Length: 157
Image 1 (cartoon, rainbow, N blue to C red):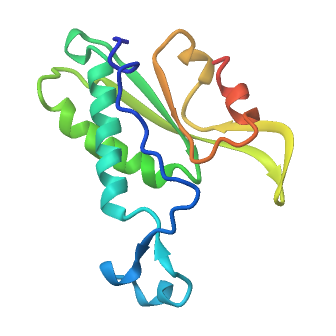
Image 2: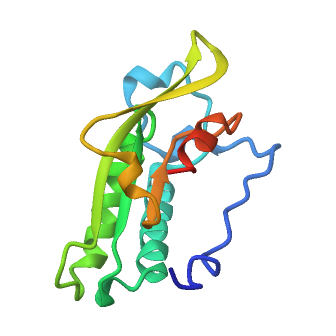
């Protein structure tokens, strides 16, 4: 991996006291209208940042020289973002890669019983041998990292 990942763009900071944008500025589906008072982060903004993450990934690896990355999506929460990220990444990859430089799989990590973290997460991996990924470039797409227990279970692979 190149130093480009370290030089990736800074995160966008949304202050705690930011109340969001007026709903009048957006088309709001009827089934959400009664439950919303503001839009905190517009969909287009999220899509643009997702595309920027894909660009940062593309710059971080020398795919043209044969580097490969295995992407793991932690289900269920990360799948929408993961799908968008892969779509944007594919657009960059067609710019000169003569091989398929990415592979991806889905895993499920269970670390909750009801609404409480049980501190004993387990991994359900279908179609992928996590041990075979050791010493390879792996990007993990997860929706929420709260306690860190899930990531601590995945990092040794």
